[in-house]
Amino acid sequence: MDCIFCKIVKGDIPSNKVYEDDTVLAFHDIAPQMPVHVIVIPKTHIESAAEITAENSAVISHVFEVIAKIAKDLGLDNGFRVINNCGEDGGQTVKHIHFHILGGEKLGEKLVK
Ligand code: AMP
Ligand code: ZN
Image (cartoon, helix red, strand yellow):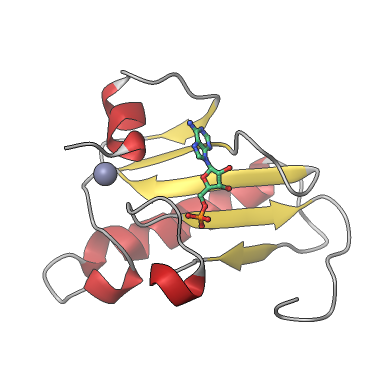
């Protein structure tokens, strides 16, 4: 499958890893939009948030445990934002579900531009 995040999971494409366990991987975004910009993914290929089901949601729950841990580890004590872009209208460019952790300075108050 031609999925860049699956290739990162396999190690075929390098990444700057922040966290890894059996089911979840996190790495620094290649084009950071904030001082801290980390991508968190399940290792299993789920295309988008629209594909979350009762069968695969446990790993998504675990993703959020990992997000809390990474935020602590990276010192985001004053807060941060988690973003998931889903599908064409949501602006999703990589079709492997992922969550952006954005922080390190105060974000804009608007939810979207
Ligand atoms: P989205 O627009 O929500 O699909 O976000 C995809 C994100 O993946 C963007 O912020 C990209 O900068 C990031 N990205 C794409 N390729 C890589 C890569 N090889 N390593 C790290 N981040 C990447
Ligand atoms: Zn994938």
